[in-house]
Length: 197
Image 1 (tube, helix red, strand yellow):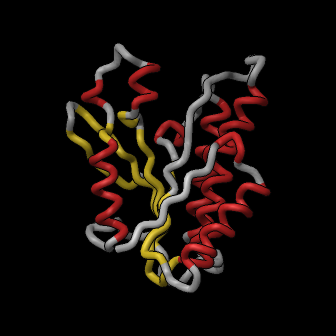
Image 2 (cartoon, rainbow, N blue to C red):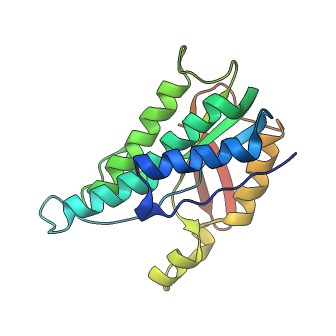
């Protein structure tokens, strides 16, 4: 399995940057087809309706989660093989109200809707594409450890665990079915489960 990775700076994501990345993918992939397109971009910003930075945080969250997911969808429409995997990143929190982090919830809920739309007929994706979204609660990242240094890390999902799962799904092993699906990723006392919601 060949892996092609592209990183998009979240604050620079927009129409022009998406077009640049799509062009770069075309130049690297050419007429070859990919087994999977995985978008794990995202971030977090808090704030309720009274927050002075509400509009700014909503804009940032949209760029980090929605634009990157739309870009992954467009890349998939052109470069994913039939029966391939498109995986996006939503959030378990966005299944309900996110009053203290409106921008985050808004953007992640939009990703959930995008998964549903991409998994429907006439979405523009190749035949039998598996469209999935992981909905983590908290990922064990350096940024999260820095921002929540006193948290119980045994309740956080290790990145290596997710990486191993995603590589398996890309290769067609133990891939959740049916598609589209939103998949809650939950870690309790060091044990991680992935469950459709």
